[in-house]
Image (tube, rainbow, N blue to C red; front, side, top):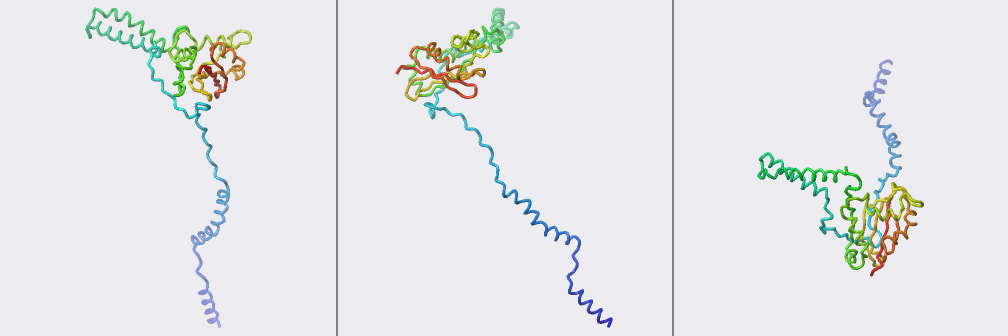
Length: 272
């Protein structure tokens, strides 16, 4: 009886599967839980919309009648476009170098060394002072402003631009001395610095650049672009008649906003 029970027990154990090892049991448990955990982790990612990077601001393009037109480079040479500071430095350093060389008999012309040093020192100092802006405002060097000229405006300049517009363009595109800024006299009369109804001088607009372009009706226009952080568009608009009076006759003035703290005064020639 006992032998029969033992035989039945052996056959029952043989039918049962082999017990899994601890490593295999842990692997099975991990695989059984993996789909659910992955589903929970991936589901939010799949449902979320991909965030698109912020689009960059488009580059500033010419607007109005000048859109799509090519600018003409200003290759015209003029002595007025050369800095006196550069001339003074170049000539002064050359005289000093040759003067010292001849004084120590390294170069010929020792009899001229005293004269070369006498003129070389002041020229070098003046040139350095103009470039370093260490002199008073009355003698300081004022650099020319950039000028953008479109091809169609260049063709109309000689025929349609008034003498005053030509003079304004010539004055602001060369080095100047004795002025705090370009068009200083004109701005002082138009904005009346320190007077009743005027503005403080520290708030004066500063000319940044000029443009030569043709309006939509085919007229030559000289655009003055000012930076004025302490002023508003209305401060220019209410002085539109003064701009017309000062830069006239034969022109029409339009005022516009040119961007951040920039204001455009468009001087349109009536000559056709």
